[in-house]
Image 1 (cartoon, rainbow, N blue to C red):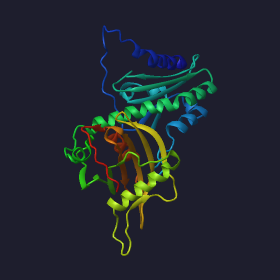
Image 2: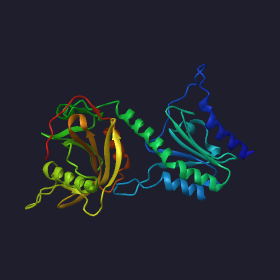
Image 3: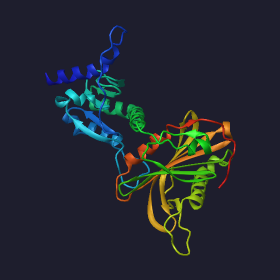
Image 4: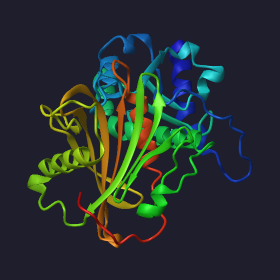
Length: 337
């Protein structure tokens, strides 16, 4: 009977959101949950075995480019017996069970709105793990997209009204009001906010459209660009006889991925920064945006300094901010630092 009940819940997940026939729309409560949290629902036997290991390998994998190892999602595991009431209003849910059918699907707004419910089934352990392997990256992308949207909706309630980015670069970002413009130069704006034990930062500048000459030298050129910007605009503690400034971490190459921001092709860069002559550093996230209409590469970077603290959610907020980018006017001037 327990297995039948469990199976019934699985099919409810899969089909209950499909009954929008235009006659009557069911009211859905607002979804809940901390940013980057994930409810995982499955039988305890599966959770403690190979299936649970596979789920953790994907959904609790270490986030790339952080100083401390932190999981992609904070997993809240529960057996199906407690999955009821307001717990079902969690924004991101992964449901795994044995079943005669083999599938991996994502359903939206099943119990709450907005919500993603991923359902993975299989008649054997091997089928379930194979479905996880096949669909985990797609599911993670859907979960992350929803988390980005949720983070943006939260900080949009109170936004910074300063116009430095619009005036200098013809762009806008939805930046929470806790941030303030701290530095402005001809080709550089630095916006930051205080957090416990440190700061969160956004810097924006532009480079000529042809700055990056070749894919074969892209990583080297990115490091050269960042170090030049750091030397010019981002100083550190005064040290007699030395020009202490931000540089890219010397011993670890950054991770570089193709991306898209505001409908434009971009490169996403995740890595670690440090100071050239002082023991401090942290993670950074850079987007190099191909803005052909304005004959430039627009660079927006978020970085955090908060020693001995977890930074996953801080960096996630910076990513969410950058992904609100909008182009408000044409900007034709390009400057090489």
